[in-house]
Length: 172
Image (cartoon, rainbow, N blue to C red):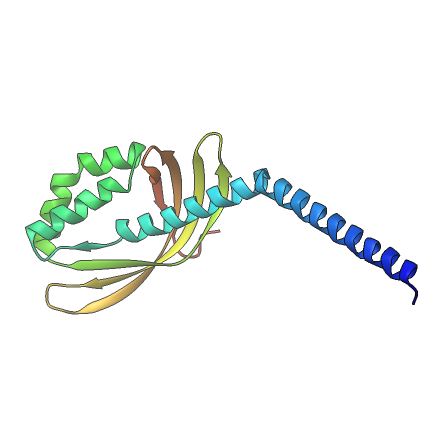
């Protein structure tokens, strides 16, 4: 290979490297400003918040008054809209019932998915299965599997549960 051929090959390799770098920068710029990336981040945030909040709404320690009040306060913290209003309205009755029963419940979301997300309206629809481990005052424990459909709303404090509906097993 002579000198001229080596120089031309060097320039060709350098030109190919510059083109590859330019393509990489262009792809990165497009992906960074891509609406689908923002949508995916919003979807992931709504799903994570929804799972966390459903677990909270299915968990409560009824062993003493302080635990019941703290649990009911958490229910209010993760809810908004009509669900929040209903929980607020029934709080004293719920507290009395829970203190009498002395049971504890621990909800674990086993599976969940968003079925809809409207970023402009700030709403999302979620379906989930939740295992609720209930322990009675006597210490007897059992696990119930529940299915829920939840409406989430974006608030200044993040995503919160606006409506919650239990779906019976066997429902289509």
